[in-house]
Image 1: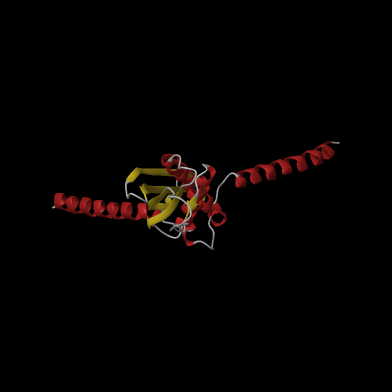
Image 2: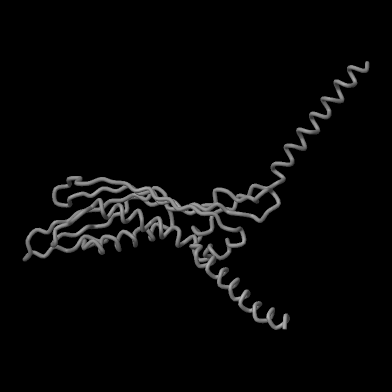
Length: 219
């Protein structure tokens, strides 16, 4: 009877553990998703700063300077946020229709200062525990809105967004994407040998100094 009860409980416990593990994996964003998150937050800030544009107007996106291969993620986020706000977005200046009146156009010039994901720290808990990785994604963007007709700068703004978490070292292979180099930052580990070696050298030096003075005293 006891054996049967155990048999009943084991599958349930196993299902619970599998569900918990699956939930944990689902709750950890990939490096690509972490960059998407900070890009979306920065784009929301900048789109809100632009405000409303006349119905017949448009905004021309112009990246004056980029930071790397991940910049397209921010551009996509900017386009989406502005479209959600009812703003007509273009990446090339539309051709003028002679029969139409003057349209209101703006150049949204932005500079991607930083759009990266990195591992600021890789270490073990209490030296002997499992490895943990501190992860940080950054989006730093500055922008200005210029009236295409008059050349007047009508708005300037910036956004700085950051995402941080700590994940297990074993999860790195699942959060990195081999197709995108920017999702695979360097893994600069804090190895125990870096701590032990200086301590060992210091110990040897102290020992030699002690022996030297001991010999001097005995003479």
